[in-house]
Length: 441
Image (tube, rainbow, N blue to C red):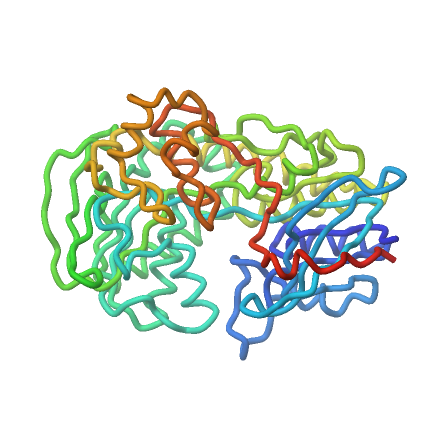
């Protein structure tokens, strides 16, 4: 029996492990090769970040790399049963099972990409994928790259691409940072620590002559076998297209319109959800980061998108709560971070005009090759009035990703509430699943 099991080793998971490790044995399950997550990602030859070094050196933290959690269910006597696989993703991976008195969920979030004509071409990727490749391997996704989306995350991604040797042709922000002026007190009080970082990124782009344009976005990608050019649109406040221009000689496009919390494990565990800062469901937690399920805590992006500092503070609170302790200073940082997260969501919303970028043959679900026209036909002619019916009638969300990429966009286009109910939280081979499950120690 394990005292505390933590899923995810990003800023939230590492902070939770260090806090809980003060008085309990901790098992830290990590999809990556070493702790750090996206924020603290380093090349294999680089020294891990300070929090990762602390985790690896801690005598009571059992860090298990290359481990994915594919299911969570109630265990005996009020415990929580966690089903895992460990090993390289491209090989047969034995399944394992752990039981825990306390479970802390810190799985993070997915990049959100909005569809547009040509977004399925090779060379189009999410901003997070581009940053992971640049930070983790020192490789750029292309030689001549454009970034498009909304939110401050575009800036560090552009910087990472420059470090990897790419030429960044432009950063196109669909919104406008001027919306921060609507909440100046919050921006200065709760976001002052982030201002120098953002100023440094902006100054670096200026020194490298990288254009940074507001109310502008890539609305189409062009090419035969891969991206060769893009169409960039000038947008109004609701993201409706006002003017178009074409940029040739582009071989990569990185898109990022915020993030979507990874809620599968929390939903499987029975945790209650409520609307997050941007209106999308997140896990509901109390002041101790406790969910509605006894013994289950949540920290990081699944409680609301707010960045690494907020995630780490929540992890500290959750880890302390799991061993019956409290951390008033971390709790104060959580309150400040959530105010900033609310302001961030208000400053960089996804506006409805993006639907006007689509054509009938624009793929919404790339796994099943479901176009926008197919989706509208399912809604209009087949009476799809819920996400389950819409999946069955259009096949959107029935592919290998199970709606992780297209589900939120499909729900938005259909005007339906999103669904995060996936009993299998990570892909698993049927052959691995057919093996007799081991008995938990």
